[in-house]
Length: 239
Image 1 (tube, helix red, strand yellow):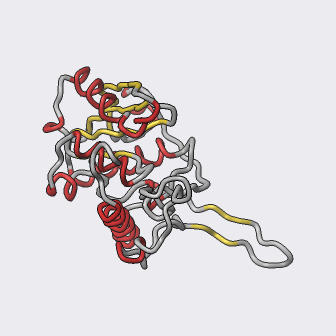
Image 2: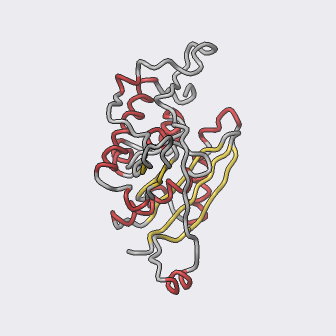
């Protein structure tokens, strides 16, 4: 945050937009095909409840309402800006994906969404852990012989708004990039970060969004606590 001069106002505005995008996607049914209803057994004679949508996205979130939240580390850092509102939610979830060969998919009557083109893992100084996606994406793109200009959609897990904005600045993304191809249906801040399932959740949405748009390349990337980043490039096989 300090290194990239990212203000509290920028972080709260980004977080509010993440919620707005997730709500639009929910209302438009964009998550329906990738979401499996879960039945929660009723207790003490109450009927079972069926959970069909993610609980975390909030309709009432605005940058103004987020500005009222106290920074998490305010007692030890008077300049702290990260709050519960501009950081990811800690949610329970599960995700699954089928990885197979084209031949086996055909044999099973499955329609593949994409192929894994390349991937990259990188390490950075632990105190800069949020910037890990930048060198990881660079490695993945180099191996794929592509550039960011070739990428139609980029999904980065929103650990913190400040972290996401720092990566976007390193990538020199402008307003149109942020609007048209960057976390277009929300991410960790609005949908939550269920550790162990986040990668699958992001991938499910990324590949379906590529399919809807008939776009070719997408990147999924995440920072990792301790100073790492991971990224993967996928290609739509249906265009």
